[in-house]
Amino acid sequence: MAGPGGRAAEPIHGQPGAGVRFDWGNAGAASLAKVCAALVVVDVLTFTTAVDVAVHRGIRVHPFPWGAQAAAYADRMGAALAVARTDVSPQRPYSLSPHALLSAPYVAELVLPSPNGAAICAAAGVSGIPVLAGCLRNGGAVARWLRRHGYGAPDRPVGVVAAGEKWPDGTLRPCVADLVGAGLVLDGLVEGPGGLSVEAAVTLATVDALPDLRAAVAGSVSGRELAAYGFGADVEAALAVDVSPVVPVLRDGAFGPALD
Image (cartoon, rainbow, N blue to C red; front, side, top):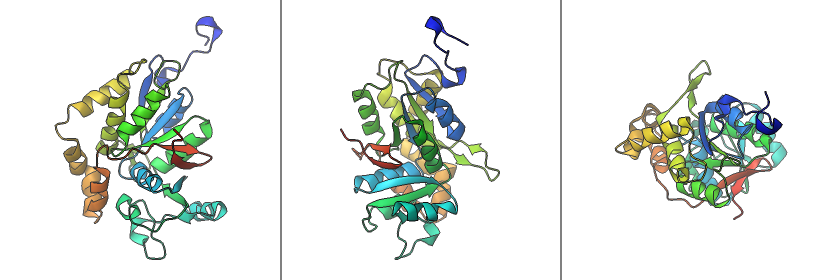
């Protein structure tokens, strides 16, 4: 269907007309990547938090879907491979654990697989638009960078994607941590010229209504589950709000710091 001036009308699921838009998971990211000028992926527990920590240390992070092919990809890239938290050893010190990455030996290139945030980022990276990794640690910095570069206007919309988690059958399970992380990014974009879509506005209002963001994330199913598995330090690392100036941007298949 053609819109005014003969231009193709945006699909309604792309939330047309708004400068800042919001959706969930792989399908939401794919939808927004088609119509937005930039995308922010939020996977607080723990992919994008791990990316923030690693990029802050000067490590380039290659996102990759979780699975057996990650090792071969790391070999092709000449990169170290992150393993499951339970498989970490002195010989393989890298994982999705932000706490461990804070002190792991430096490596120039790291393949960081995950079933949610990494898979979304890897898929979104082929869109050609800037893909940013946002979390509680750097949500303010990410929003400021986007506004400084003119994103968030109706003609340069930003899509904020909460990665969510997955049920055993592979379907999306929205989670509080990513809702809160997305809300922090949206809060930094609300004063932009383009306005929020209804979806983005409802998300921001929900997060604004929480009396204690840190307590909400820690007390959520995902936060409690991670702590119960013995990774409470990762929850604490993820709960450090706006402590990082880092804006990780996906370029040539890997996250590095924004250039300005």
